[in-house]
Image (cartoon, rainbow, N blue to C red; front, side):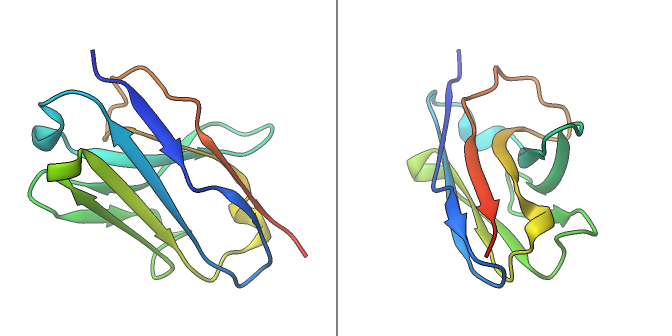
Amino acid sequence: QVQLVESGGGLVQPGGSLRLSCKASGSIFSIYAMGWYRQAPGKQRELVASITSGGSTNYADSVKGRFTISRDNAKNTVYLQMNSLKPEDTAVYYCNRAPTASLAWGQGTQVTVSS
């Protein structure tokens, strides 16, 4: 069973940057399309970025041009580079398969954007 461990969150001022990492156990990670999801307080979890096994990417309109998803299959890791952060990006960020999150959720990593 694939396990997911997210890291890299924190407190950042508006306009700042963070890089999130998600390390997956299991040797079949490289064939999965993966995504980053986020859940803000009182809101549903949403998919914000995804990347196929071949490296094609897709982004939600709310993060397009600011976030970049990438992956390193040799390290079983997917990344999310977040630039020009806004207070509305505050949420717990998770990774999972995309577009259907069929793996067990990890603990997530908290991102707080505040001055």
